[in-house]
Length: 573
Ligand code: PMP
Picture 1 (cartoon, rainbow, N blue to C red):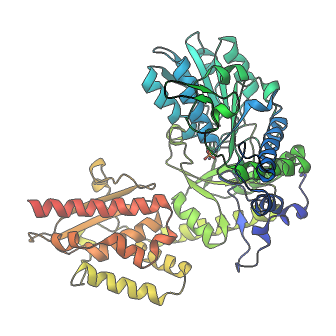
Picture 2 (cartoon, rainbow, N blue to C red):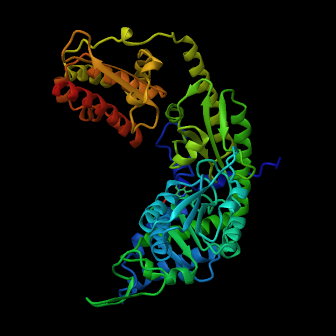
Picture 3 (cartoon, rainbow, N blue to C red):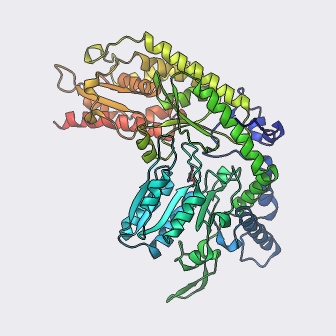
């Protein structure tokens, strides 16, 4: 085991978010793989640019415009040095990794892919390195092949070599997996692809903030990353491409700055990099990104890497000691990412995320935009903690202690729960209408002062929900659009011609609570009354939507939709 080499606390002190006294609870931020926080240096550089130097670039003859142009182009030089690009013109500013990949797929793909050609991706890819290739494959008739992984979450290199053939035109893989943290041997992957004449795109979104990048040493043909995972602003990123490839590709978007000459008959394009930067770019974003790069370099990528490895080592040891918790992704080479599921007792990642949030701990839950990877692992989602320069061992201990507590509470609850359920246990509402039930719920919410107490109320409601018999949990009752598993079975109440009752269940406690709220609103009401009630407006009016993530709001909307569809069917029949 390596000795722990941690960065000094003065690094964390440079992040205003962690020194703010606005919140009563100290913030433990463990979601840097989604987005890193920004140090004062970056915030100040963006702010100074807006205060002192802003004008449109490349056009104005006046001093201010020239200053802005200089800052923007200096940012490009910083990026080129950071990546060790041979020529700054090979570094195109984009909105981020996603836009960079879409650009290559659309432009390089349109010019180079034909029916029967093959594109190789890997099981570890983020959707942004899958969907753009599917789009261009559909247009060109190219085929997508996928590098498998082993159970540790490492690429199967032998299988990769076998996929390579003269038909392989492009290989697109990430350098680090955002979901599992696996560091991929990209130099080897590139060399093998080049041996069959294929071009390689490396998605460096999860690498650039964690180790030195040298596109020439890697011999990458395209390399992409985003500023907001590198302590920089959102809305700015980079596409590096070898000059001969970028020169030969058609432009991406048409507009100002990307042209040499325009007539109504014909347009000639500007040279690199302008050819791929149509319109006014994100100038302050580029300035912020360059500042972030210099800040990271001053700290030293070797020190950052040692710090994150120390956190990873500690987190892996603490989390793997928690009974019932399983770490997903155990590659020999990993960056500062730990993904896990809780299997005993089974606990949905949504509940884990919400419970940790109530303790001031920010982690990511869900499929991490890697649904094919989740499918390969045989799970719907993981909970993921990812580390940055500001994290320390105490953050990890707080996470591990909180998880121990959450799992112990779930275990105690599980053993107290009686096996009961089915239609017989369903208590129909006594409210006269959904609106009357809504008023009762609103009154309780009003009485509860804050989100932790309202959350607990919803969870308690969910605990009282009668479990749904396994026989009713079929594909027909499954609700799509929910990240957790949800089933809803509805029927006409026995002896009634228009009264709906429904049973529903989910693997997530919070969702069970939401189902209990829906039960209060709807179950035992007439189909016409259900259709007349605007549940979405109601949930917004009690502020519930503010505390639900977008996917959860969509899930709730999907459940409401399902009940309404069933009510509709009753009304029509
Ligand atoms: N690739 C990987 C590996 C990522 O983790 C992400 C962001 N989660 C992206 C691409 C897309 O980055 P962005 O959303 O900044 O375009």
